[in-house]
Image (cartoon, rainbow, N blue to C red; front, side):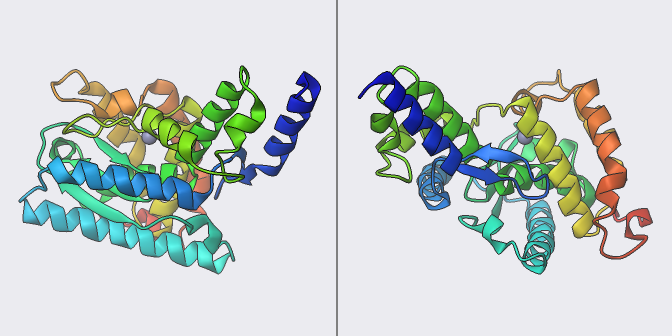
Length: 278
Ligand SMILES: [Zn+2]
């Protein structure tokens, strides 16, 4: 195939492979179907759970689950209400607390959210857990995993014949998707290690997290202080969360600037003034 023809094909694919993120309405490149990314996530999650030890801290396990469920109900109700249940395609939410001192959490593109016990040192009440869970849900509902894989596919296609790369996307099979998924969500033998998302994805997950928190009636105004505390303590051992979710003064400032807009998502006027932490 001639170079121009390849280029035209790429342009065509990119034009047809654009999605729009939930809440923020940003145009994004999505060359994979939600179903294929979910299937890869399911496999990865099953592998992870084979070796992971689920926490026996019943109180916190229940807290994580109940916060997660409240956030999911709020998000689902909202998206269905605005006629966009399609943003939930491929998401089958689950919340696990793992017996591991790592200060970390991750979410796979299929909505499986994993928190490690170490994060309870910072998030030991429902409102703080809602900050962490909301952020992770933000990555999933905005399809950041699919977008990252799609961007990689496009980069890799630069030196290859376009049809070879894209024959394996939703326009064809899934062989290369497996490889790209493995690159994006590289798991160690025991502790799940998800490569850091880009700064753009982190900021967007923060914003969407605030919106979901507000929809669920949590106090979004505690969020900047939560991240400041995380930042101040990040030199302690086992602290992995900020390596996968880099936080700095700018990011916290962006969170603060988003608060008033996020507050418009409160269903119950004044709910944001209620302290729900205890
Ligand atoms: Zn993140």
